[in-house]
Image (cartoon, rainbow, N blue to C red; front, side):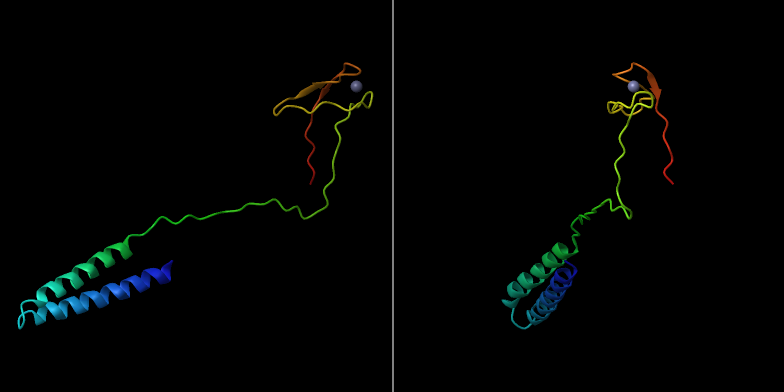
Length: 111
Ligand SMILES: [Zn+2]
C-alpha cells in the first residue's frame, strides 16, 4: 500500500520533470508544448491520484482464551436437587419446577 504510493509519487515527479523539460524546450520548437503539456498534466493527475488516501480498514479479532481449565456448573435447587431452568438476564429469583420453592440467585465471585 505505502510502497505503491511512493512508486506513484516517483513516476509522477518523473513525468512532471520531463513535462517541464519539454515545456522549456518548446521555446525552441513550439510543437513540443503538446508533449510537455501531456507529460506535465499526466504527472499532476498521477500526483493527485497518489495523494488521495484511501480509508484503511483495520480488522480486529478478539478471541477469548481462558488460561485455566474450564468447568461447567449446573444450577441446582438447594432444596430438592433438581436442575433449575436457565435464568433470564437480570432475573433474581427462580421458582423450582419440582418443589415449588423460590430460590434467590446470588452471584458468587470466582476469584
Ligand atoms: Zn426444588
